[in-house]
Image (cartoon, rainbow, N blue to C red; front, side, top):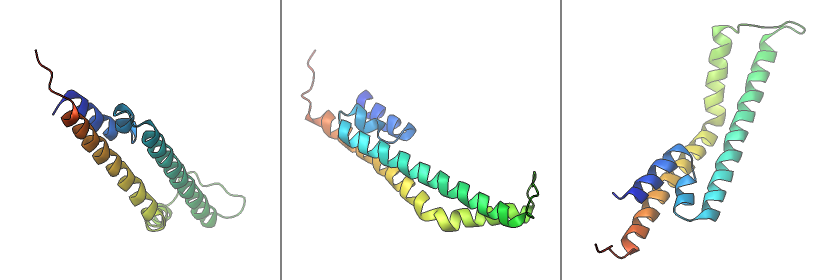
Length: 118
């Protein structure tokens, strides 16, 4: 595996879209980076809202819970996955697509280049 292919693959592992950027696919990189950012922010917002709802329902009006009970934490955990699993799956799928696409496009570019003679 050539250095450029390895760089695209490893960059895609670190940040979705970075491998495409290194391959010269700037628009595709921007679309992937933007999509991942929007999806992660949406997931964070949904989980924050869920935590707020569960904690608000578990407390008496006007009181403050500093340490939630194990049951409350279990409810947050269960609902976070059951209600947002599709969003997490979408993020992971897009990330894996980004890695594979960066790798295959780097390989294709690598094969298209004429060999360097010394």
